[in-house]
Image 1 (tube, rainbow, N blue to C red):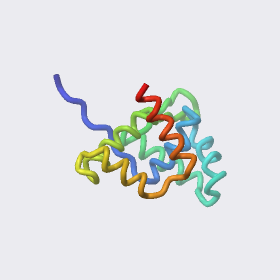
Image 2 (image 1 turned 120 degrees about the horizontal axis):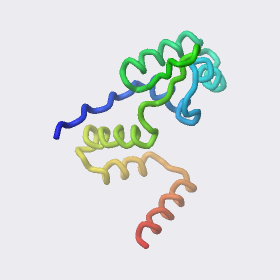
Image 3 (image 1 turned 90 degrees about the vertical axis):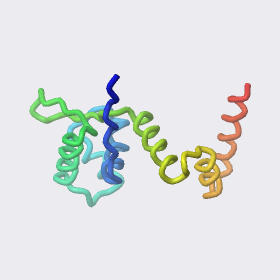
Image 4 (image 1 turned 180 degrees about the vertical axis):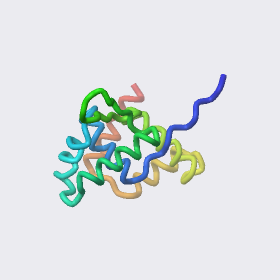
Length: 127
């Protein structure tokens, strides 16, 4: 059975755009630009459009060209892409050890609320 090629890894800018697009589901470049402006008013429409076109070419976005304004959507679900990026990070930075990743994350300083949420989740897993 042939193995599928690994999905492309987004750059930091592409990941930022995906973080905006995932909650929208599918959107035009104009809609994505308007959403990005709330956090980063310096970003131009042309920059957003060009980045989305590049991401489509790379396979990070799918594009519906049936309307006058093209509608873009993420090619991968958020949890799927995050899982793939996490697996890659664990392999490259933590010698394949998920425990080492978790310990580094805990040492980097988490809030009391986050710690309580993690403890609750671990207790639920034990049941």
